[in-house]
Length: 324
Image (cartoon, rainbow, N blue to C red; front, side, top):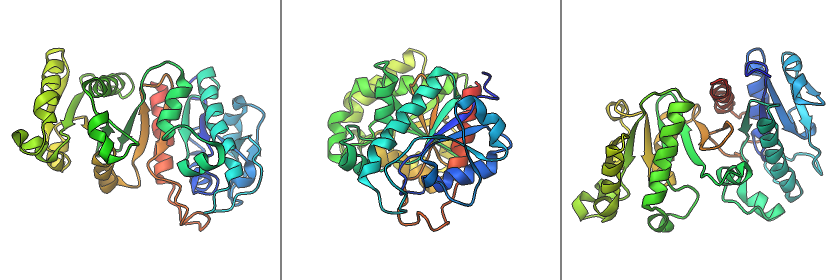
């Protein structure tokens, strides 16, 4: 199956959130250009679009121009917008795993995941992972680390630590972790994004990148020496840089991706610059996975006001990366 005909599979995500609505909106926008399949309970999709349940992924391309193709996965009950149902938690988890299986078998070209709600999965099914990225890392089964990148036309940024409390960041951030994050980011920018010689900007951990030790020791004691060592190995790295001066327009022209030290240091800039078009891309996996850069948005679920732009961009990027 060629990349042009192999569909992108969209996992349903949390049914009570806006996932079904933005998936429907993405199908309306892209049905003539990118074949896709939605995986979940067809009862959870909005009633204003045509839906066709299909037997296998091979039928998606032919169906996609007239209806949203669905690989049905039965859930215990209907969708109630804004109110997660603990009975749905295991189904959400199972759909993600089934989507990975489709991609790894070659039946689908890439996986695009709708947002999940971690607390709902923990409460309903004892979900053991901090988020999508860590679960996909386990499903890959390679032992390799997965890395989260947020990407838009204006900025690509990678947090070295992800879903942990801020008070634990300094302990979790180690030379091995930062090196691995840089290596994976460099490899995927080269191999999947077709950037022959990636330029990476590395943020400091502390304010003003430690200001010579006055505001923190990590930059001088090991971050700067690690970056020097990796430059000698051929990596194009700048830093450690003060995070508060890395993201204005002139600074962004100097690098292809920024490596941040923790979640909010990475996500605040990209969500400020391009909230609607940001895409979450998981690096380091043996398959392509993207996701819209927003959450379940329970407060607007079911109101018809959800913006599908990030889901549209996520599907488009998944198709481009898979084609490479």
